[in-house]
Image (cartoon, rainbow, N blue to C red; front, side, top):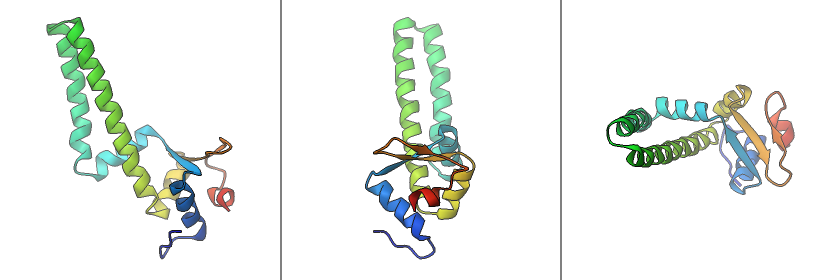
Length: 133
């Protein structure tokens, strides 16, 4: 059990349930990418690099050929998905370390909770504190 000063009992229970994989925190991809992009030093260049890869892929299609263009497209897609996953991990760790930030994200519909055993998904305006309770 995690006990941190300043966190409510419900939030510590939420953290414990997420760590034990009883629930999953779902995130809006745009929220995760934008938050990561604006709050980390590595997020900004990696997100900008995604745009550079897209331009490079178009260039490869036009100048080099279809086969190499498809390979560049595949690699760009793999890179973009990887960056999104890293951003999601970063944001989940930030949300689980700050109850106020979690509440803001939840009320903005950027974070949802899913019960892994029943498949039930809850989102704002349903109170996550009552659902966890």
